[in-house]
Image (cartoon, rainbow, N blue to C red; front, top):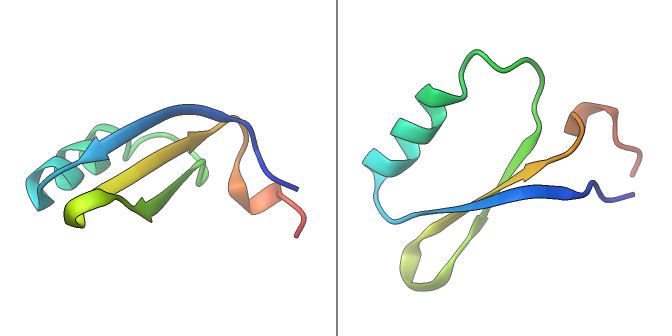
Length: 56
């Protein structure tokens, strides 16, 4: 089962990733995934529900 994506964020630098992580640090659960993007970037996909509750 896959969760519905709420938003997608592209991080071009380690500082971008750190900023995003700090901004979402107080949100309970794990509702995001990181996938490789073009040119060495990172794509953060925020999901509708906590990934820990998803069945394989």
